[in-house]
Length: 545
Image 1 (spheres, rainbow, N blue to C red):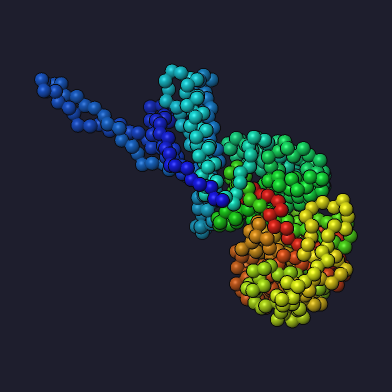
Image 2: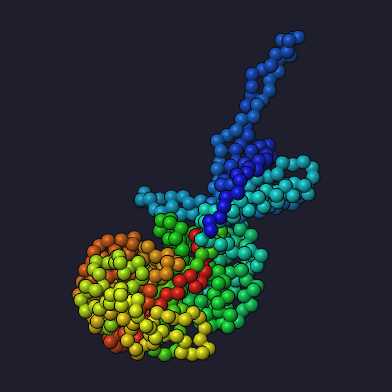
């Protein structure tokens, strides 16, 4: 149920400028904004005494300047503190409010780019009255009021779909110091630590020392001590955390721990997706970091889908982002050698792979989403695809599945009820694309595959869909390049490419024939061979906006 707005209220007071105490400020706090006006004293007409012309006097009347209106939707926090003068003495009580509004800036060439958040600090000094303790209490009263009102405003703006991170406990902030260009620690000690301090978010920094360190940490951690787990790294560290949580005996409760993401790697797909869900224009680099830091400080939490991924052998994996085979998987793994150059590694890898473009033979099967069965978004209906089979809706209702349930009694996680075990035929209500040549197969849970690749523009973190894309053989190098360039703005689906097919599905199976080859799950290389996956809607929770 959507949150109900409380009755409108206002808080008013007069403050002074922290730099010049002679400057008076009229401040108003409402449910949506903090408004600051400078009070100026303007001379009024002289008043004449009736007894003598020489008794004429002049007076001043207050006048308010144009208001500075700061939206509480941009506020991450507000603190009270005691200022110090040049000699280290008591300089009065201050109210410090921190805002990150979006401002559209321009490139050097004059071309406008998307609006990006930038920091605005508004300081107010409590009017001096001789009682330092009382002044500090007044500053704390205002700081608390601004913080509570901003939090209430955020909850009301997003309705009942979102909850908020509890701040009574600490955040666990995991940083991989080697991710991306090796700058993750500098990103934390710079803007992120400052934002968390401004938002009064208690947290503990933990650096990972080796592969699967984070997986071990969360698998054994006392999660009752933590309000959320935040990853400052690439998407690989989030993969470790999610699978570590799902390996716990208490996995059902553990996976409900809110997860936050801050871009510190090469791809930063989930961070770009979280920014995309705010409905703001695309930003990159430090602008993306500030956007995700802002979302983290706001602390709004929504459900997130997970994919249950089964391979020919080994334990089940849980994916939050992607499953890839062919061109995309090859680029992801082959570009590892270019990691020191950062996100550009993917561009370099793509150009190298385009120069020696190849196709991959295999079988692809999938279960269409319920809303896709009647209204298919791609160019053709599945039943009319060459080499495809698709059963009728009547057959779907009479289907009896032998689900791919737990093969290991110690296996944790939700039951996979849409798939049959690998090695057995897929259920009869699945679409089967028989023995075809592919350039790539890509299944997505989020909108972005990288900061600058918006593969599934309509994806949402809990839509219950796997966004399945595949490109068939025969596509030319220039056409494939144009396709990926169009993904920068998410316009590739409007190009009507005869080789690109897009489906919203609930489960899929991929059976490669070409060997050797590469399959990746969330950018991590996995066993090559048959693989299948199904979506579990809202299984996890992510800090989003």
